[in-house]
Image (cartoon, rainbow, N blue to C red; front, side, top):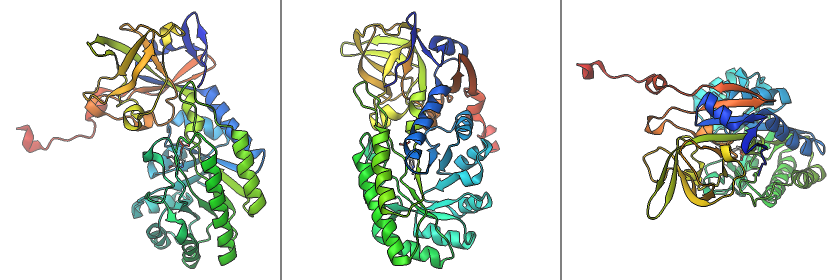
Length: 419
Ligand SMILES: Cc1ncc(COP(=O)(O)O)c(C=O)c1O
């Protein structure tokens, strides 16, 4: 877990006091530290590229803020996109189409046509998608997503590589899929898999690398097709809890690239980290509005609920919480940190030991850069929060807080109901 600097008991991020950011932009607000984002990108890129050519396709499903994309574009990152909307955001942020790889599922013909028009290479998820693309855009650049039968991750919802999930072409059918791709006029450049998200150990990555190496070699032996690119997807976990360990990227890169270089003719490795790159660069700031004690519980009621950060409610995920305006004060009492949503499942933390809280305290919720804002909603008609970038002591508003007008925009009441 990341350490933040404290100045006279005030937590700082990117050289700015969190309470000053809360005062200036309001809460809840997501705050991203540009220096940390760049450092994370460089760490993962260097670990792999020092061993073999590796393209880092940042998975923007984790965080699609345009300023974040712009920073990663300047760092030299490429992109893993899952929807035409994500593709549009990346084009807007300055990525050329050849730096984007689209990996969709349940893809419509309309989306395929739009991708083809934008010349974005496509990772095929099913035979249906491949055959439809052959009609829509013959010869379009493709690779194919295989379901490797190896799944891992922090929750069952995100273990995408297991046999029973909806993703990819089953590994038993993959040689035939490449054979059909060739007969349909495609020249597939690579192969893809993704085991899942939030994987905290190296073993599943090595297991799937071995599976993929066997497949790559079988395709070469049976079809005479040497694939150039092996995409092992994303999923590198981060330490959310104080006792969690960081992933040893050097050990991971060593083991993966060693196997690939030794046993295949693959020229380029691709990784699709989302969480690893963005997660610990960002905190969510929330204000305590209400402190309530019942005979059974003590609640800290904040303005961040599961409409702001759904991970605790959806996955049971842990996010570290601290008090920004009394940073480092000893933990005294156990609180449920809850939000303003009318469901008892609306919580950020449960039975969490914190300093004694008071109305007006600013809470800092750690590691919220990934799957934080992108999974936020307007549930209970609550506006989406603001996003702020901090860099060298300066703050920049990168996404405005929604207004009440945003909540009604696009809605129409049939005129017959207006009389
Ligand atoms: C195909 C694919 N690639 C990459 C990712 C990114 O995963 P993470 O953010 O855990 O690195 C995901 C996440 O679900 C994914 O589905």
